[in-house]
Length: 301
Image (tube, rainbow, N blue to C red; front, top):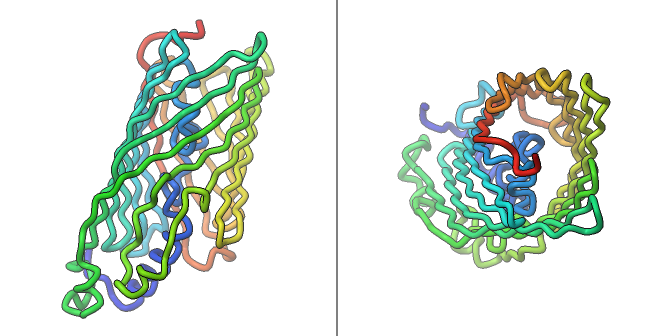
């Protein structure tokens, strides 16, 4: 990737400012969470009943130098006792900024009545941030020199979920402690963070129409203490348990369409495309791939 010019500096500056309000997310725009809710809420680790591995790759704002690139890898293993174990790696690059987050997760579900369950989950891990001034057009700039640093900090999150038949309701605090963004020393002293500053609420419903169709509408709300909340939602339709597709809508970034195929009971893949939105203010054409690998049968069988 070439050096970051002045225009890109402005974009990176905006990303840094936004990251203070939204860094708590596993990824700023990661539509994989609609297919793998464990990414946003540790309470859903293992909720499918399958031991499975998810891999995702997202390139945002295609054609913009230094635009965000997100790679995600997660693993979940449910146990007969109601306990579930998991882990995830998320690598995010935005221009000269690179973040690598690694977490392990423990979850537990409790039966409520005959068909209801309450899910609890907690993730613990570390976050590594690096600012590469070589990506700037003037790496000797005093501000760039001050930002040239790397840091490792504690990271973690907690979540709660309720499941009844096809209904799922969840709320999560994705980060106990968010690493500070790369800012000057003077500005850093004026910033503060609390885990309660950012939370995610989700509501989803699985509507099974027999052997032909399954519909899954999902609604998601992101709460930010010092910013306007963000609403997004989607609808996934599966035909004969093999072909699936649908659309997602984010009030700030617009429309995303997706298609996927279950090659077998053990492997599936999907492709997502986000269209440009005039209201977004920046080009946001994005391409995203999602892969899912399952191992063995569901413990629910």
